[in-house]
Amino acid sequence: MSTPEIHAVTGAFGYSGCYIARHLLQAGKTVRTLTNSLSRTDEFRDRIETFPLSFDNPDRLMESLRGVDVLYNTYWVRFNHRNFKHRIAVENTLKLFEAAR
Image (cartoon, rainbow, N blue to C red; front, side):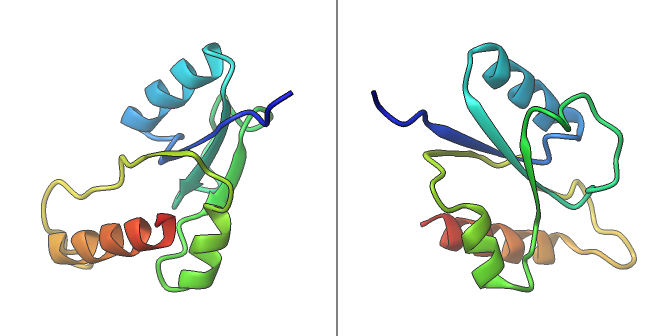
């Protein structure tokens, strides 16, 4: 018997990520999420593993992706905010991809 694939979805409690997570769960996949919204109410808490998006801690980020076979990245920023810039989102995405690699 083979080990089931683990699918990680960034932001599974958000708008785009919840649709991906729901589809994967309905297909019988093991799902994990990396999120900045650990306290957000959602429909998946008892069915998926939850980890913080630890961009400031590469080892922790890498550990949260250990064993993952497929990564769906929905992390992005639509426009610059006062305290959060598009450039930072790009840097964080590169950190995520490096941890996944």
